[in-house]
Amino acid sequence: MPKIVILDAHTTNPGDLSWKPISQLGDLKIYDRTSGNQIYQRARYAEVLIVNKVPLDQYYIGRLRKLKLICTLATGYNNIDVDAAAHFGVTVCNAVGYSTPSVAQHVFSLLLEMTNRVGLHSTDVRAGGWTKAPDWCYWKSPMTELAGKTMGIYGFGKIGQQVAQIALAFGMKVIANRKNMNQQPLPQIEYVSLERLFSESDVLSLHAPLTEENRGIVNAARLSKMKPSALLINTGRGGLVNELDLKNALLNGTIAGAGLDVLSQEPPPAGHPLTGLPNCLVTPHHAWATRESRQRLIGIVAENIKAFLAGRPKNVVN
Image 1 (cartoon, rainbow, N blue to C red):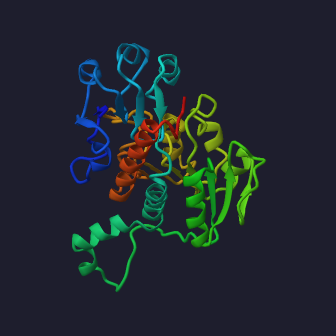
Image 2: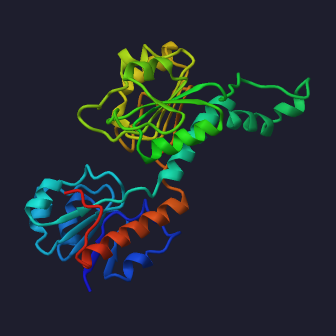
Image 3: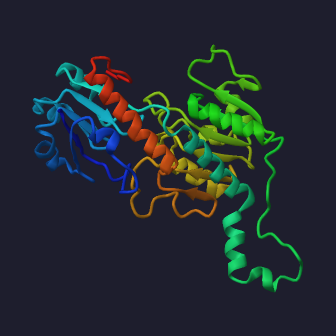
């Protein structure tokens, strides 16, 4: 049986799920976290190496002589030198589609908290605010209805499309910008330029993978084109946003608010420009992490390993 090593298992499975789909395929060794100086010692006999965020560059891949397959516990694989892996004859496979329902759900968790302020009002009731109120109802901040508003989506893959369907169910108009603008749009979806996307959206949700071309695509110039009432949501990649520009836009009222599940540096340093703003919700990159999503992820990685061992690798990125 092949030797299988997971180097950073904890964020996928802190103990509430089963690794059986993978353990039944080989001799499995699991590490919750692995630092750079531990990689070689832990992985040197591995034929199959599974990582989430542990960096694997040419130095490590070239030294791991028994390695045949790297599987990511993620869709993204920026932490892996895929060219070096190809050079050394190592196949790299990612996991696709496992988090679509979970991330789309989180988009609307952030959005509805900004439009309805459920947390704020529940906290106030718990503190006795309703008991002391002179009227039978009250609100501590304006609330906004989604019906009739425009949802803009940047990046229109599986997650972006799922967000679009939920937005339509709320009665929103949906516009989108994607890499291949010539592709036939889905019913009730209009593909628009970046200029229109930023200027027309009441809610702008980011779902594109990070590339050198779109790094910092949400910057001061584009934020200035947005409506003062607009809300920005990012569950894609932190690097899509120039964070200092967003901070200034939120402080100056250029846009009304933001909901972020990703930042350019994770975990963020103390004093990060966005984590202390009252009109910016930040969650710790957990949009993907429902129990169901994480179990699907383990299953997809197991299927990737099984397919590779059968000589029919799938989800290959190199």
